[in-house]
Image (tube, rainbow, N blue to C red; front, side, top):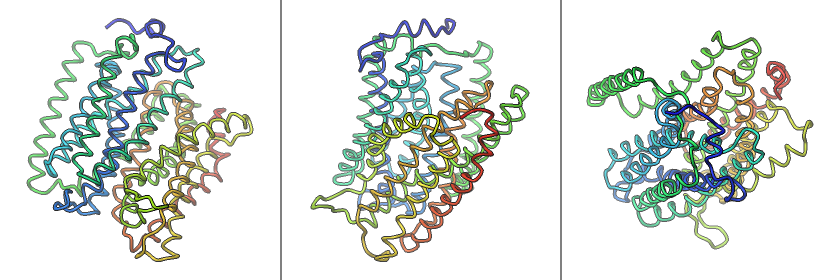
Length: 497
């Protein structure tokens, strides 16, 4: 592989043509648009498919188990991003890794579209988890490769790309959800598979012409000796895993319950190990150690927030189907449609928040304060769902406006945490661990969902006041605690705003 040369990469990309951006942004915009369409379309009906009775076209899994599987699914998707980054950096380059990831995702959706029962569910999850881990972190890296560090279009280019992500997520539940719930879940999963196929076609047809060399270089390639060693290790690891599965599954040592506990443990243990290794590394200087200490409460705050936000596709999806009046202003609604609210609000509110921070300038809240506001808003988004149960009890259906309000509040919190956290991560990361710290940031979502795998089991409509009240109240208290320590955290950040 030729030596990595960023200037050569940038010069190889057609630099005008898609809203004044490099033409390659067209390729990546629609690739990610259709990937998110397939993923969020599938996710909008997956919970319902799992717990719906077999005679009605579902799998008949218990509601408690189904909600835990959804949480574990989300956690593993974010965990495998670390693997995807390593493969791109050491073996394939980001462009090839994105393509293979898309292929695996499509295979996963195809498997789901076939009536293969529970075995098909877990096989599809394997393909989609690995495929998303390969594609999701690397497609963003290819976007970055198209711009030189001095190119002032970079931020607007990422904003356009981010819109593609949310537009795909917006329309998917409306299309896939309607077909899945009205006709047949497998038809819905077929549409998700077709969406990923369209993304792959766009990528294959336009990448050579529009992307140039972006994403083709392997930044830190393995040597021939290293490749053999890695292949041997992967082979040995695969054999060991196969043997363990062959022993533990038939003997009921490894069940869905024990697997959820294992993933929940890893969701906390992996980031903890990351922090210890980075802090104790001789490559980390004193200022960087101080910033790592400042980053820890931000990571925990992010984990708490994502534990609430990611329940939008689990507990709030269940709430939409079982507790919500699915008719409003004479329009019949589908429970899956509520999954479009999050991307809809983000599309409208993200520019508002970006403009707000710019206008406030030096007067804008500090990073810890923004995180505090984010967690508090996330907590309130759960607490508002106490009121319909308090007013009318848990036996009657509630107005869909309560769910709309809940999703609106959690998006306000997300915009205080998600983009701010990405920015803070790049500034607080030790130089020797910059890429790994970004992987650590995404692990905060995985950790939150790993915790969710245990929490969501506790939900029951008859006790929803306690459920929403305790979780929401905990988040609000955590937000005020973080706020009280915000100035102290700021001092540990050593000049980083």
